[in-house]
Structures are given as structure tokens and as C-alpha cells.
Image (cartoon, rainbow, N blue to C red; front, side):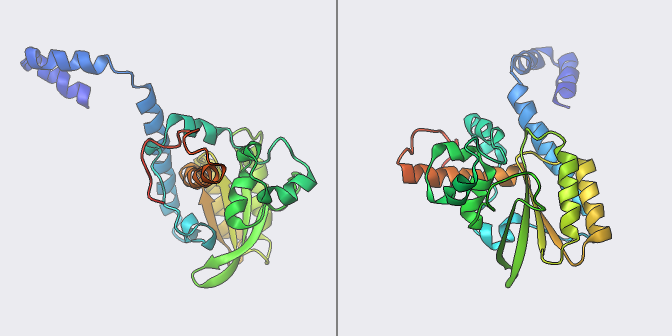
Length: 250
């Protein structure tokens, strides 16, 4: 639209329009386009939710685990931090049963790539060692709307192969469980529309009073931001890693 207006102005008033066109053409739009594409994807995802008003979706910070965590806009986060976010995995490289059960008691920087470790500090548990055959990855009780509820977390990271199908199978199995109140998908990437619609269809057809919660890229970034900030405070390395371009009031 901007180009169109300037092109028209260039015909009417070339002395005014030509310098502006040259300035715009000299700008590197790569970072803007990447940020805008991610934002646009999130907006489209939000619209897809509104098409299924009968499916109740719980906001992540309405759960007792994450009360007080505010959403941070992606354009407020440093590029280095977003690269760290992309490196998060469902489990760390030091993946053994004895390590998983005690990892929340240990401040170890190598654990910071593990989603179970990061979320576990808020949930209160990592769910133990991840072996790939669980109905859910982490399950714990929290408060939602003044009631105690059991939340089952399904974790998916960027490098998962066939993660969409495995996620759907896990999600479907959870809808068949009477011991689960809220099914929460936590992912470092925004889910695509087909996956979201499949999850919503599973909720409509099979859920027995279940609710669901999506922790996607912007939610995971907000949780990870606060996690890194807390970790750095404990380790006294505040200036080691540039988390954000701004100072956030947490």
C-alpha cells in the first residue's frame, strides 16, 4: 500500500516521492517480514479459535501455575533470546531417570534447554523421565476459577519429527481420561490450522467435560523469559545474556 501511494505521488510530485522510494528500497525488510509473519500466524490462529465457540479454551495465565505472567510481544525480545527459544527441547541431553527426578533442585545451565525443566519450576514437577510412551508429559494439580483441577501437559518442540500425529494421539487419549480436567499443549512454535482443528474436533466429539489450554510460541516465550530472568538472578549472571531490549516489570 505504501509503495502504491508513493508510486502515484511519484507521477504527481516526483521531487517529493523519489527520495522516499529510494529510502524504502534501501531498507533490509528481512527481520520485519519474519516478525510480521509470526504475528500474522498468531492472529490467524486466534481467529480459528473463534470459529469454534463451543470449545472452551483456558488462557495459560488463568491457571494457578502461571498466575501473574504477562504476555510479552515478540518484537520486545532480543534476537539472541528468540534463538534460545528455538533451541528448547522436550528433554535435555543429560536424560536419565535419576537426573530428571532431582533436576528442579539443581541450578544447572545445561538443563535450560529442557521444556520439562523450565515448566517444572512453575508446575512443581517435571513428570519424571521422558520415554515417549506417556499419555501426557507432565501432570499436576492447580487452581482454576477457585477450583482444584488436574492439568495434563503435552510438550512439543521445534525439532519434533511426526510431532503433529503424536500430539493428536496423546491429545485424543487425554480426552478419554476422566482423571484429567484440562489438557494443555505447550509448544515453542505456533500450531498450524489443521492441527488446531483436529484438536478442537477431538474436544467436541470425545471430551467429557474437559477444557483445553494452548501454550504456543508467545506464551512459551513469556514463561521462558521469566524463567531465564529468575535463573540469572540466582546464578548472579545478570549481564551474561541479553534477554530483552526492554526492562520488563515482573
